Length: 416
Ligand code: HEM
View (cartoon, rainbow, N blue to C red):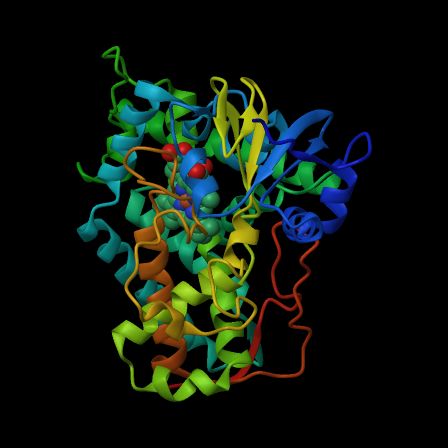
């Protein structure tokens, strides 16, 4: 017996998605009381799915593919045209193996230390300033640390504009009109900049450490034995630096969580690494960042009596799963302690994708993200004292990606 998938009435729901943002999929699932429904996005049929079991099929590479799924407008801003996010099978797995090799535990630690050093140097300046916006400081320091870590030379006078370009690419994701144009221009500038640097490394005009991501990317060979095309190498190096700068969003949410939850203060002050880890995990669960993920059905299959036909677009509801009461008790409460229990969450906690990062498309940068978020939390708890002045800390769920309106302003900063 086949089950009919609930179909959302109406011709196309792209406008609803743009208007409603993060809760678009979950609010419909709550309404229809199901974990699957069909809608139309950008003139195309799309099946939306949610939950641990749905996530397991979504990451089954025999059933789904990524090639051609991402709209060109997203490739031209966020990811880079034809880069790793849209690859499949052997080609993807070789490229992914290479990415994973850049993110060893030692490399992660090094990047964390570089970032901490930058934050401490900034804090020495903050004490003489009336107030600072944490998001701005974090994105600049992440850009400095990421460039230094990868081996990309960056003049101090260029930090702000380069960091802003990385942010504009991310911000271009859910944007139409001016936001899209800004993201596209930022990508074009950044690709030209990084291409020139890789070219210099290849020609021996710029020497960097052997094991630096820049050097590795410059001399990485494709499966056919040739060097990666210059344009592709630049896009993939940007796929390392840009998401590091994006951690500034999570850092801002981490500060907001500290502020909104004074009940966590005592445990944060006791400085237990385990509690820090639980706290940042809860930040990644509670606050919105990735809205959903898309893949295309590679061959016909049935799941729970529902029919999936080759070529259909499927969207996995990342935001909804982070707030799903079948996965979390009281999902709308911020409770770091929920992560005390060690559990296999490979397919149920997926703020940066699910499954095995070495095999599928799950983010290879989760280790780095958690390391840097913990370093930031430690910095905010143990390295500085500050006041939080009156400001608009609200974040809109209808904007993708989102951020507290004020970017988290701090004043009267003192070193501890
Ligand atoms: C993929 C989120 C940080 C590099 C992804 C995916 C998500 C994600 C949702 C897609 C998963 C999928 O398609 O199944 C995030 C978030 C981050 C973050 C929210 C925090 C700000 C990082 C960092 C790096 C990184 C720090 C690198 C240093 C990548 C790459 C991919 C990816 C290269 C493509 C992987 C593939 O297609 O196989 N990320 N990420 N990300 N991320 Fe991250």
